[in-house]
Length: 208
Image (cartoon, rainbow, N blue to C red; front, top):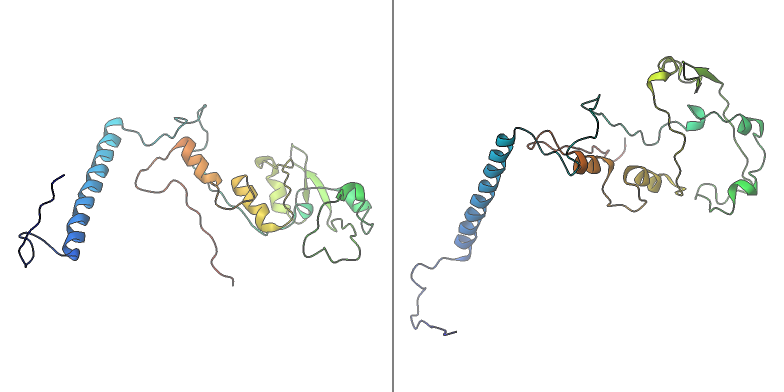
């Protein structure tokens, strides 16, 4: 490689300063991005369909086209709503058996307690609908449409505190930063609109 030098004392002809360099480079990158967007729009218009994800769509015709996913963090206990535990009510006030705890660690709220008494629900449960689902007296209106609900009682987690349990429910891992349910749905099924996000998370900032 042959290096050429310039003996002139002033700036090189046609040279520009750092600000002008950044401006010109920025315009160039903007043009590249615009070309990519226009190319995507042409491809979208040519195919007549949106991004279908890695699965290319569901494996059967869906009955529902839209889903509103509500995760009620900190809602009422399942023991007071849908999870009927008659044996727990009979043993109300008794000490938690070691056969149940099996050496599991305790939360910060209960770790310093001298006793670990069982606490059954104080509310009455009844079976409702054709499914015969058990529903607490706290939910009389929900009990009237219980056949329209899918009540899942097979969930399990090793998390003993709320935050890691919530993260586990949303992502399948107690470690934060993993893809959430909506991200996986978008990845698998794609999006109907390239101009809007397929999944949006709304969180509460602060309290009150």
